Length: 542
Ligand SMILES: [Zn+2]
Image (cartoon, rainbow, N blue to C red):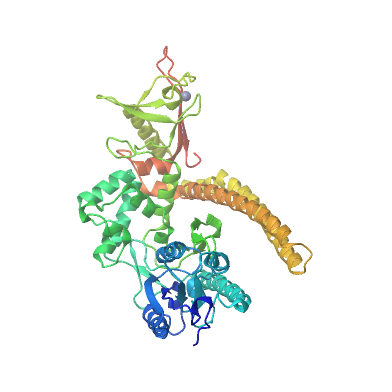
């Protein structure tokens, strides 16, 4: 290629020109149809540009600037920044690139530097494959068109990659390079998860420990004491390279409160594959944003579950009840989330003294002091009372035939009505959302037909997108409520099997309390009679 001589290259001026060569290898290059095509590799770019420099006796290399693995859109490119700085400081006469798109695919950047700043700083821009030369004035139109095409290309590419991933996700294919703890990517099929037999039992144990009353922290502590590697350490030991590991001491990488919580709430363990939780803002802005829950791609029965539905529902109901573990023992007490004040409706919190444990209304503890129910109730007293009541029910009702009849009654659970009305509400919101989407399509067509201006379009579209997010939030909320009610409902429906499981109970535990009792309400102490009102709301009709 012959580069046209510019002002600086006339025979009269024998001036040495300092050339900066800019190289960039990008993500796009890795997605080529032919993996062996390395025409874009750094080595090739360098050879090509060095060859060009050597053709000119008055050119010397000032420096090489090389950004590897960085996108051509407006993201941070450290070497690019250094190049611009050197140009501004008058250290460079020519910037040489393989093509204009290597320099940038962003029209704004092209406009800013090639058409403004470089002219101001007396820097000439030359590119090899598309013949861009800022000294050639007639070249400007083609540079602009090139820039525009490059920008479209990048936007298309980004959308195509997203679309391809979307299709894979909707087909239930696993697209992440890492599987969640308890699973591995099937070596025979990259898009499928199979159970990791080596740690499967650990996952089961975490769920079981939580069910019998251990809190997140207590479970983490137990696993750490038994020197069971936490998920990130386990991956590291298996030879995966993880950024979180490299900078830390192996001994410091332990199970945490959060790691346990993440496992207990991950639907992957009941066979559901949930992907597409996050996305990037646009091809130019790589900021990661969370998508609202109803936009996630959820595929049920995508792989073999580790946790059965009963265990899962029990754990979720407990998490929703916001059970708090005692700071001293790390255990959730057996009545956690169940005991409320009959007078004011606040929940009762457990208090420990050296001799005994008590439950007391939280509204008096928080300083409001507006509840008449000031005196606490002894924990062991309540425990005995509940145990007695449960065993009374047994002796009275333990008759399977009678239970079968009775269960018909209890099936008319009041939860189902609530669930139905929530589903109605959700449908209404979905319909409203759909109408909005139709509106957007009309808007888009109006724009294409030239009925509205670009400015009008962007304003109206922005309005639409804002309200769209609100719909998603509302729908999310409803989904959460439905989930809680469903798990409560399933506990209720199972009441026949509850009776079959326990014939007589010697000691209460959290599982029994959760299965039998919906709510306990404690009234204030009558000082004359030393009695107090206690109501038990059972999970079934008696
Ligand atoms: Zn109270």
